[in-house]
Image 1 (cartoon, rainbow, N blue to C red):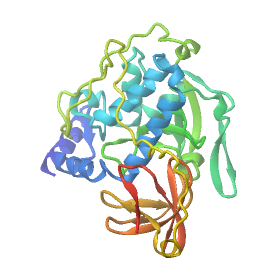
Image 2 (cartoon, helix red, strand yellow):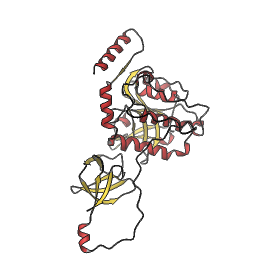
Image 3 (tube, helix red, strand yellow):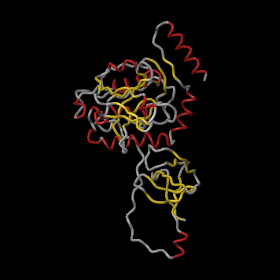
Image 4 (cartoon, rainbow, N blue to C red):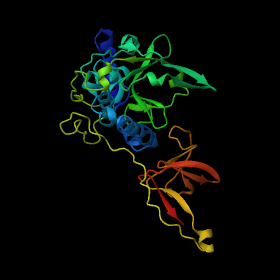
Amino acid sequence: MKKKIIGLTLALSLSTTGMAFAAADFSTSEAVAKYNKYINADSYVKDELYNVADFRSNYASLKGTLAYQVVERAIWYMENGYFIYGHGSKAYGKYGYEDCSGFTSLVYGDFGYNITETSKSYDTVGTKVAGVGKKQVNGKWQLTGIQNLRIGDILTWQETDHISHVAIYMGTNREGQPVVIGTRGDGNPTALGTVDSWSYWWGEKFHSARRVLPDSALSGMAGKTEKAPVIPQSYVLPPQKKLADWRNGSSGQPTPQPTPQPTPQPTPKPPVTPKPDDQQSQKKYVVTKKGWVSLKASAKQSSSTVGRLELGEQAELVKEVNSYWYQVKVNGKTAYITTNSTYTKVVTK
């Protein structure tokens, strides 16, 4: 904590002289503890990494284009950048922390764009994307006109009289929900994460979409050259693993990171008629393989969490809904749990 206090004192001192300053929200010990807490948590593995997998699957045909590479670079920083939330001019390159507009500026800067680091100035960035808005249905908000968006667009949010948050559009996920990547609050190992739920704050405070990339960004690199990611001179959160190479061979594309894969489907076998005793005794259950796993209200990642299955507990298997979800019974109630073989398996008892 001492390091954090010194940093804030220095920031205040510099600000009174009119010089650029920077301040992080976490000390090194706090940042490391947060990273270790969330690196394997459901909030990251089953939300962020699923959205990454969906982006790479849904937009594979655009791989190698400028629009695709901008989003991939944002993902690279989320998975390898060790971002800590904080404020300051070019703070990530110096200290390893940044805020929402600084992150967006950093990503676009890796492709030769000079975009402001001040969120309230994003009304002047690029051009406004027409036809994108919001509406409230049955008390919940949703974005409208998402068909007008392109991957790599910038979405903005406004709480008072100016824009207060910005993020980069990743396209839609498997459920058709629009997804953005940018700075997030708690629940992720670093300051970066994704958003795919618009029912409340994210929908209500949505302001506008801005477009920086030209039409040709969907068919090639639009004359832009991809630079290497910025590596900070010093980190608040030191790298907790070896940084992944951002290139894939000579293509200059960020190296894809491992993402959760659906459980392979077994080859159908001829049905076996069980004996009467077997019918009474043979049941299938879902158990966890490492720690607890969330139970969902429906077979959708965006659905509400209704509980969790702890290591050592079992849930009666009702059916396999699809390659992503099991329907189970827990204490007589229906719930849904991931089929990801990293976290769950089916046993017969």
